[in-house]
Image (cartoon, rainbow, N blue to C red; front, side):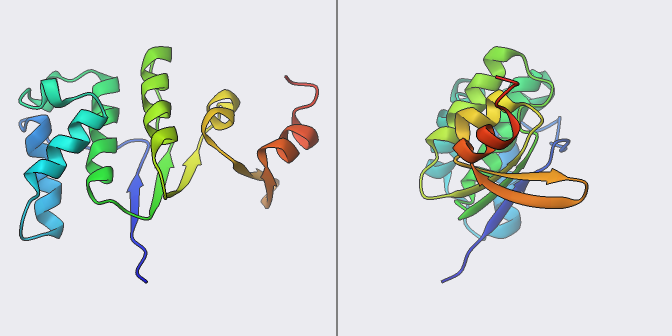
Length: 152
């Protein structure tokens, strides 16, 4: 069984002279001969951008750009998703929108890098904690017990 991986870096580039929909179409065309228009609409609706799908991405706010980037990687329906600081630079409302989308994904393995414990607590079941070059894996409860008993 093949496993596909999608990656959304903290800083990514979209095409400012393309609309939100055209940006997804561009990336979809790179990997497929046929673009699934219904799937594009579904992903834009999932990230609450369908109403703005015909606006140029240069007109999008930071939060809208983050959601568009997420829609692009979700289009590919990968089994494994890697998100590097997916809420970086967003206000609390924008952070919640992104985190709720991530939390709602089913049957996916998601690796998410974040420096915000509240975000990790909201969406993760396990934590890989790096300290002095050593990585230790915990359940969320174990992590809280070992590292955060005095911080929360």
